[in-house]
Image (cartoon, rainbow over all chains, first blue to last red):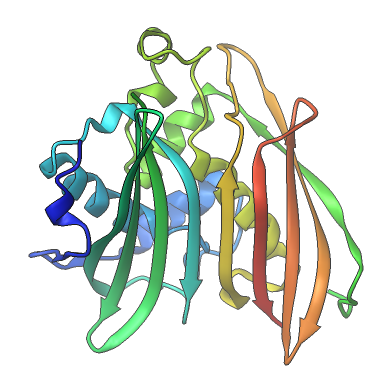
Length: 127
Length: 132
């Protein structure tokens, strides 16, 4: 059970995440995307999911019981190699439905003052 | 790419998903949840078999979306994961992505996406917005 006090709180990563060309190319190759000059539209998840995973694990949720309910990306510009991001994650809501915990997490990737990508994930922790 | 028109149906694309692809996606995305790689583990938590990362299915739909006007043109993308894509050992599972132009407003095209696996829709409310 997620501690209800955590809902609405924003957690900002202590360390910045640097995007390498290698990580973009690797992600693009898996999905058959030939353009590696910019990151594929869902690439941000490789940064934000790691952050939300840490956040939820620290909140006492069992990550191996998590299934993904839905996902949204708003992309103000494509991610490119050399980007350095600070990720902030907010647990927007948490509710219990039939014993399953449903948690919505928003994560923002900031490069300096610029908000580059926002992601919203609904994660279902199966009972 | 020729000009998009509201109501236009876009050509479908097929993707093969197998266990190797799940491992490659786990490496590329950092999502090493064992339900996507370890059959015994997946079954131990009540799943029928190894299932694909929902985000892999969405990434493939994203590749389809990118092919319309370029990945740098995608400004919004969302989907619900309504059914798991079950990936048995030594099997290529076929995922078919198709799209329809819903509307074109102020230089942006809204695309509705459909993802079908074994005749079942696996993504719900899948849509993207691209700059054109």
